[in-house]
Image (tube, rainbow, N blue to C red):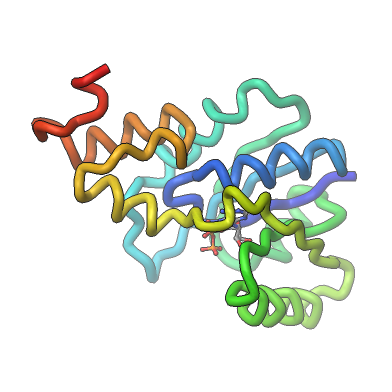
Length: 168
Ligand code: ADP
């Protein structure tokens, strides 16, 4: 099976990576689809997000990393996916995710959405929390892959006294 895992990934966290790895084990092929959203100013440009995901998933087989604009179901069709994969961290994610899943089914009934519950120890992770931590000089290396931690550090912390990369 080939699943489409769409998202902003701005930036990729260990929560996302966990879902990609488990999606790969369960389904065989995962297309990580990075959304170019013209209405939302991203922290990392699309090319950098793609490069981060490619580097962080280098050890995995069956991964494709692409960018897309527009409807998720159109992207799923173009990339010949069988299913759409999304993650659930907490009950608070559920309402929004259910609404999107219903919307996608109403647009193209061929595409079912499957949800994977995140590992408990990753359930607090979100791209925005990670950026908040980095912005205030916190160490993000237990939250994001090394490539992302370095990019966050370069973006927010260069020159700070508590720069974790200066210490190690
Ligand atoms: P979007 O802006 O489309 O919600 P995100 O990049 O925030 O994009 O998330 C993409 C998908 O990954 C969503 O299904 C989201 O629920 C899931 N996700 C986000 N953070 C985690 C996490 N810590 N663990 C597991 N899944 C997650």
